[in-house]
Length: 594
Image (cartoon, rainbow, N blue to C red):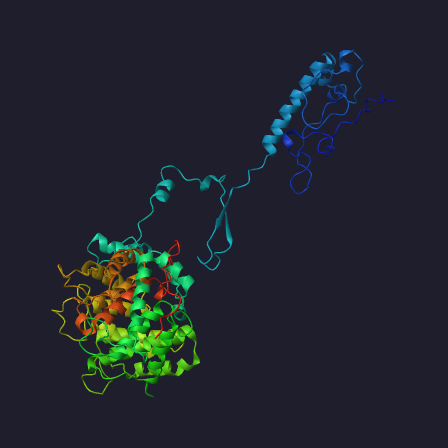
């Protein structure tokens, strides 16, 4: 029997036999089997029996340094082998056991090295995982796996050919560059500043339009919490909001007992002529712009009285009548009353307001001229049934306010407006004209008309980077400055009417044009507000282009609506700048008694 601490000799493995699990694997490579479990085509050479006899008993997996065993060093007889007649066996009998073990292991290692070289497979090709952004293409949300076989010499680029082509890609056509890059100024821009405005308009257009609010949501920024947030986001300040609070206090003090307002008093510097419908409608727009309705806000009682007065003044045909007024002012006032009533219905959902609001929208559609614009009167079927840009701007906002209240007009009305805008446009240097006519060659830029035309374009769905918008805004910003002047240095270009429309256009456009305009708006308009005396909170109409007609109430309502722009309507293109610190001002708890 074999000693207890030694294992009986095992037969040498034959060529192609699978090694037992206790036999170490050189380099961790599975000799005994190919991938898939098939027998290896060729295994390592079998261990010579003398080498096996020269090793100690059971050994741990892995290579061990060759060394003499106690049996070999003591001269103990070797275990006889079955094939001892070969020359190799005779040679091994003549050397010491340690030398024999060393030679055998050396031969074994050489054989293993040859086997590894012959049996090693090609390394796995590298994998490239390309993840597409959802929306890039129909399969953009899944990973694309690209396998590159770097071992194939036919796929390797030579230094003189392929890399040169891949590093220098052909320049795309000029049209492609213009479409894919917003950094190229449109052809009509002659200087870098105009190009900057175009770039600002194009930045983030796709994302902005994707997040643009529905028309019914444009009034959703008027709640107290939303106002504070939007003021911070869009560049308002405590000064702008405090000016709004003071202006509304002044307006409510001027309301008459029947709920209406007057263009002529009881304040100083009233208008030249009376138009109670326009005065009441503009005052309501200013109050509602800051979130006052028949249900909410510190001035809800003032709004209730004014709304009741408007509804009672409306005829069955939808026309409002609050007293005598000039014919050329009547349709302005009608459009303003329609905006105010539709806004109030949209904000409150009061069922009693639905029929009056619907009647007003239907009247607006009947008043549209054949050329798509509006004028001072209803169409008569005569050749002079032509619209003008000034009245048209107010009626487009009236129709859109009806749409915000769920009272959408017929699509044909907007299609006709688009044709009117195309016809009244003069040139990129002259902007929009007054009427569609062939005699506009000597037309001088009138900023109010151009701003109205641009706002109509925005509400009709022009893309944010449309050339007619970007070039028009560049023209206005280069031509108009907010300047109230003073008695010592009058500002003869003071035009609140134009500023009112430019403010809305730039706010909807956002980006650098809005930042440039708002830098003037947020500082100069509050600074020009009367801060002392009985007219505290109002604005002086002196030197304004229409100040003598509209008077102090007209000037105060337009300035108030300008300072409410941060939240009065949500931006049409959906741009929402990062949140800033909420902005608030001290607001009275309740409207003063009447």
